[in-house]
Length: 185
Image 1 (tube, rainbow, N blue to C red):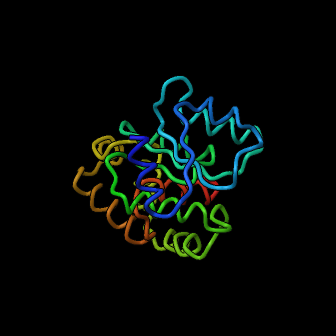
Image 2: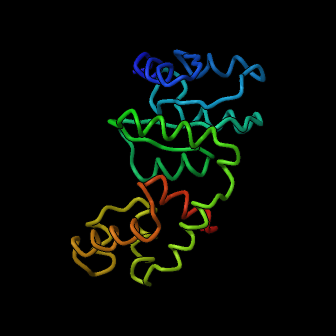
Image 3: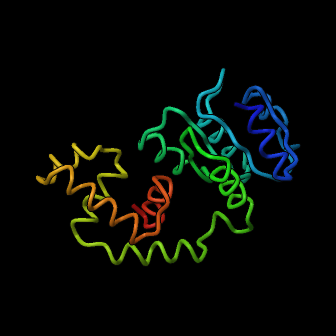
């Protein structure tokens, strides 16, 4: 996977440094070049989320994109709370990764840009029921769990989720989590 990502990023014009383990990256310390880190969640030794926490505690503001083949909502929430620039679930296409890297490298990417403002404005358009569903989605509950809690059908939950995505212009779960965190929840 690492070799494929290196090849993809180099073909897109990025200078790439690859490390077999998170510890090898951390050993560079303050000598890390400006850029973006792409890390798998599951690696030998230190996992990607722990790597992110180590970088942040060391004062590094380098954007870090976490990728995983075994993601869930709780993991995505933890990653975004820890400061991940994005959270991608495998399999993802090349454009998805390249878009995530481009966005992460954009100046002010961690600040509230126009897209964030539009998404927050979209939150104001949500109905009370959609907000309830939204709260359960970002808490990591499945459609069936949400349906039972709210006394509605799983199909109705899917309907509300689709409206939430549309009204907030969210592309996926990481966008929803980021939006939820930005509103101070």
